Amino acid sequence: MMSLINLGIIFPFPPHMSSEKVQHRRFHCVGFSKVGQVYHSEAKEAARISHHARRRCDCLDLHKQQIPYMEGWSWQKFLVRRRHILIERDEDHSDTLIILQHPPVYTLGTSSSEKYLNFDIQNSPYDIYRTERGGEVTYHGPGQLVMYPILNLRYHKMDLHWYLRSLEEVIIRVLLSTFSVKASRLEGFTGVWVGNHKVAAIGIRVSKWVTYHGLALNVTADLAPFRHIVPCGIRDREVGNLKELLGTTEDANLMDVAHKSLIEEFSEVFQLSLDYRLISELDLPEGRS
Image (cartoon, rainbow, N blue to C red):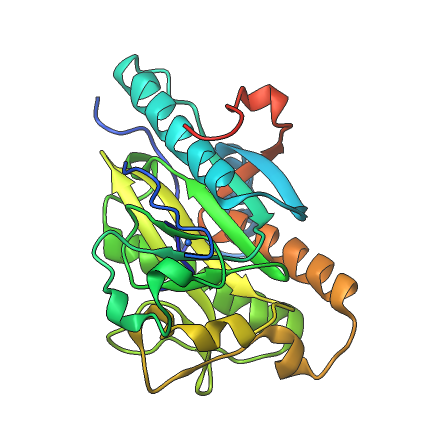
């Protein structure tokens, strides 16, 4: 079950060289060696090299669609298994990003406690899944943008704390640069807050340095389903969405603007060059895997 829990320029370079568904219905720089024109010329060339050195990232952009949780989860596991094979063959040449929405669903992390459910798990308001990600229970639903990065951290940084902080950085940049909303981290927790409201949750899994699961940003999401759980196991904080923070009623436009900014900031933070792909081009399986 999956959940919405919880820089300098990075120059990528080559490295040195699952759990089952538990568903209960009604029951996720150059140096300053010279000055003036010479320096500016070197800086321009460095920027050109940096751009061309970016690792490719196949992007499956389904942000206007509600993909069943089980299907999105199976895609991730399939891509991770395929990535492992490519790594063994020394043929791993790109990362993958999936961005989508889910129908209403609750997800639990691998060691989530049922004490954070305000209902009998056999009589859940929505489908509920236990997954292999970290973190406690969360809710996914329409109006929430979910990003699943399948990254080989050998080409980025082999540091899980760095990866979590980088995902938070994507959200913080989106809120500030696009909406002029100052967001922050909360010491001891993973995610992004605006004041006392958690607007983005992060829950990841890393297998042999390949990431999956990811982040979820509440844009126009209905917050009522969060009242049936203790989101991320944090009792003294509230959940918020961007729509209420901005005081707007433009749901569709807000989703489009937030999506565009998420894609841009993600590619900048991780220094990736996005290549938009279709489901058929990625040979993804149908249904569960």
